[in-house]
Image (cartoon, rainbow, N blue to C red):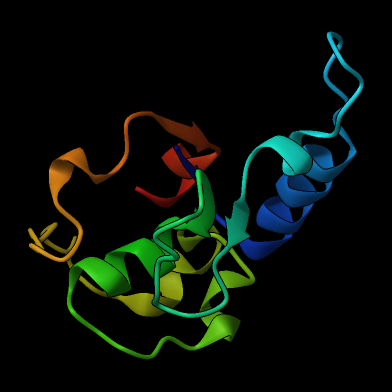
Length: 114
């Protein structure tokens, strides 16, 4: 599962929620049942069942970039859009992250960055 957010503070908040969620059936925490990765680099962990990242970092990864400046994740693209003065960017296909890589995608506030 991909949990896509528009700024890093939402990613941190999401990670905390996953870490605190206790399942009603046997009382285990979500992160005891599933590996959860909050991306701090442009590398996906193959064993993670849940990946949390910003739309900015995902675009960087789809573009084939190996490095990404974490400062660019602090605000949404909506908030800094006027300063960028750029045309909308094309979404690229990257065979390292094929379309079927994630079974399920949750978008949280990402509409602010499109």
